[in-house]
Image (cartoon, rainbow, N blue to C red; front, top):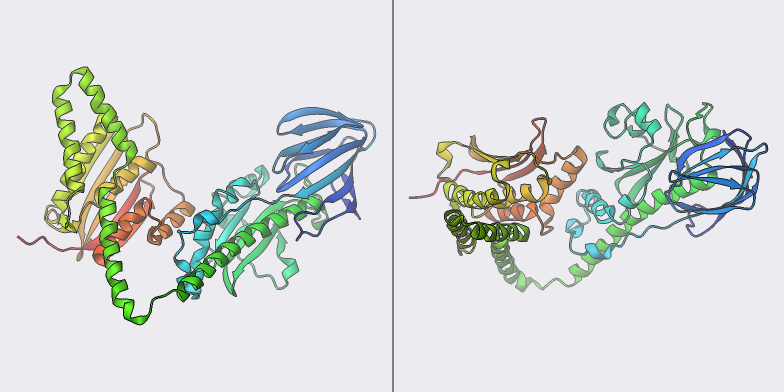
Amino acid sequence: MIQKTEWGHINWIHTNNEETLQSFNVGITFLLKGKRMPKHVHYGIEQFLYILEGKGIYYIDGEKKDIEKGMYFYLKPDIVHETINTGDVPLSELLISRPVSYNSDLSVHGSNLNECADNSEAAMSNIIYSAVEAIRTTLLEAISLPFTIYDDMWSVVIQSNNFSNYCNLKCDPVNNRSSCSCFYQRKFEKEENKQFICEYGLTIFSYPIVFNGVNLGTIRGGHILISDRTTEKHDELYDFPESAVIGIKSLLKQIVKSIISYCSFYESRQLIEKKDKVINDEIRRNETLKNNLYIVNDKVTNLRINHHFLFNTLNSIASMSLSGDRYDLYNSIIDLSKMFRYTMTVDLKFVTLSSEIEYLETYLNLQRLRYGKELDVQYDIEETMEKIKVPFNFIQPIVENAFSHGFVPSDDKKNIIISVRKIHDRARITVSNNGVLLNDITLNRVNKGLSRNSGHGLSLIYEKLKSAYNSEFDMVITSNSDENTNVIVEIPIIYQSS
């Protein structure tokens, strides 16, 4: 089979079935005199090249290599490559390529999923967020292919930042999806035709993510030039050969299979757990255990002190003792003691807001040891709200989260604002910081993860609020044009009795 391209042609001796990742593709490429293969990425394939005739230049990850007959090269997956024919005859190469398989170990995520407790469409459609998070670091961040994963409502779950300069120039797909036709919702009638060509001549592949007959979402990626599918000329773009197309399609299908495997693994887990349910006369005992678990969970949250914070505080106190700042040293030790005394308090589920703020200020006093004038804290609390009942020790961990994740190491001013307002019959408590802003995709993923009981970060606070109010509360994270990231909690107004 001969595949014509804008830079020459490829005589394919053997091409593999795209479903079989371990098969090889073998062909002979012919780069015409004076032509070049523009800079491109070998998405998800490794290649071996042997120069049969001619001479030229390779650029491999920016490194220049003069090439001639008899030389050979191995190109790793996802490497940037460019070829220029500088000779008087076509530059011919023996090309052997193979799609690679990326590791997506799901076993380490065995405790992060509760969505499969039932097989309803609502439960299964939401699982894609957990699946994406499970394979994000091991698979999705390991590949350089431009792709976007959507949920069943066509909201973006995750999107790579690997779009080409051509895509960014024409559409800016990461920051301006609404104007890019690649992201419009499409339906494909036939299984084999799940691809389309955008208005600028690039081919995009699209695959549904379906588990047990439920549509979880869609993955779409590629955004490549295949010259025999468009009449437009694109001298600045690399014309992808068939082996690279097979590699891209295999890579997208591998992502789909990894998501499906995640769902299948946890569905099996849930089926096993259902078989092990206790008999009906143990239901009351289970409810008791559940209540005890909430109590233990509250205590664990109350005792949770960031090790880095404690380490920095003790270092600061040690430095003060050497410098002779005895009064500041005394106050710092007292503040640290107050923090431990407050968090060690037992049998307290609610306290007044004023008590919670007093404890928060003790914590912030210790943070001021580290940041000094770089830290600015403001309170905007309606006077009538100071006596309302709030869950014990729930504001300080939110503020601590800003120090752990929001503020990057820098000399910039670190601003925190704690606002409490009465909104109808609810108290709205907002903790704002001027740290790193979150984009829409990250915000969507983080907000959906709050209720998943991951045992980390703000999900602990969500569990504390759930224990205190059942479903009569709201918690959401926002990032806005005021350059603040906000954690907003709304709870019922209940006044502390005298």
